[in-house]
Length: 51
Image (cartoon, rainbow, N blue to C red; front, side, top):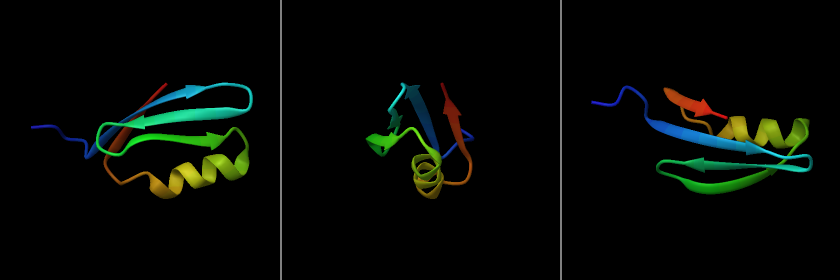
């Protein structure tokens, strides 16, 4: 049994960062404070994020 609700893979570039969730699929955010805050809002508890 997996102890994480979802696993997220993150690819960071200069202007944006791409996130792929094992359940939620692909999302893209601006690589700035607002973008990171937006990502944190969709991040479920008990998740793991890998870069």
